[in-house]
Length: 169
Image 1 (cartoon, rainbow, N blue to C red):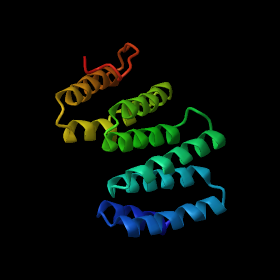
Image 2: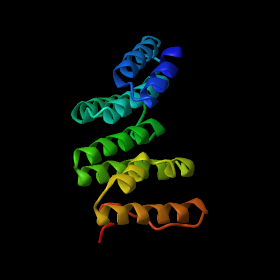
Image 3: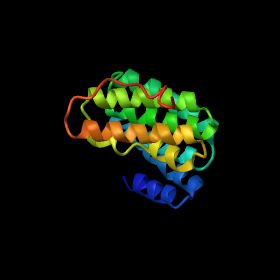
């Protein structure tokens, strides 16, 4: 809808209050028509908007609500859920809770791998932001190890199962 496009454009220009107004209107429309796919896509954008506007605790609460809703409407393994977990991880990262961030990203990554969603593995906001915004060498090392493993996965060769929690070692 035009509300959605306008909301995303405003979010990208850091006009978060205006973005929230248009994104919530778009979400309401899709909720009315029970178009849950678009409803979750828009609400993921809303969660991202909260994060980028510095409303970290509200974003965590909102995204957790969307995760519960997503599992009820779909399943515990779908692209919308992977995106929500990614944004929840991002919120935890900006809150300074790296362990929670990694746990959420592990969930997102696990879903993407189960869905064989190799394209989305490379567009992760969490590790891009962790690598760029961290002053901690261990976080940069985690991000670098992650990127190496993604390159391995992208070329179609079998990759070992891995968890991101202990990559700083």
